[in-house]
Length: 84
Image 1 (tube, rainbow, N blue to C red):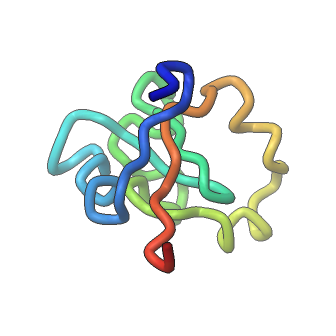
Image 2: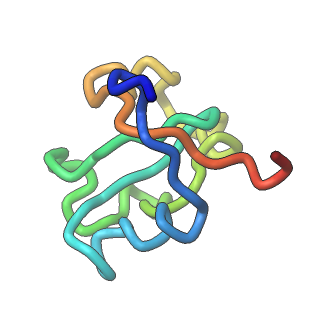
C-alpha cells in the first residue's frame, strides 16, 4: 500500500463533510477532494450558491474564477468512482 496515495472516499462520506453534519468542509472537483475547512469563504459550508459536501465540477463553469482556486488547498482524497 502506498502511503503517499490519497485516501478514497465515497459520495456519502463526502456529503457528511458539509460543515453541518461534521466540522470538516470538503468538496470535490474532477474526482479530487479538497479540505476547505480553513477557508473563510466556506466558513458555514456555503460559498455563494454552492454547498460543500458535494462534487462541484459542473458548478465551476458559473464561478468567476477557474480551477486554480483549489491549488491552495491541496488534494486530501479521491472521490470513489461508483462504476469501478
